[in-house]
Image 1: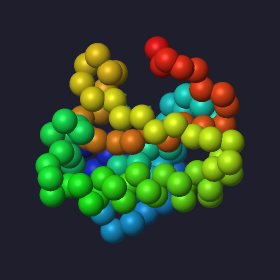
Image 2: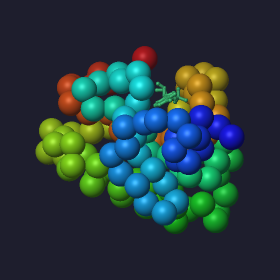
Image 3: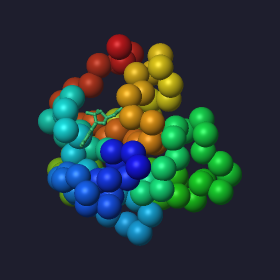
Image 4: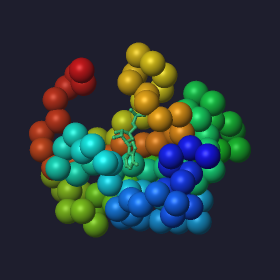
Length: 112
Ligand code: AMP
């Protein structure tokens, strides 16, 4: 099991902010902004480049849930950034697809 599957199965603790039948969102353990949440499918898709056509609805619902999470955490109006790191050069460190939701401070562009 990946570390995120273990979080979804409640085998590892996490600060969960949102949950649906097939995905979960929780605070990143090493926050890079005042708000840093990971939105994660419960079933392991290793990375976005390996997502299949059948995953499209799930991925779309995860993207839409970001708006609800941003609203719940008070950053819908100030703004938020969604990031998916795919592969070594992008800085992917956990091989289980996740969307970073970052907010709560001005975020630089381009990212490092
Ligand atoms: P990435 O580098 O895009 O693969 O992102 C992986 C993220 O998972 C990093 O921001 C880590 O801080 C985060 N992370 C790793 N382990 C945990 C954990 N147990 N609970 C919450 N976040 C975690």
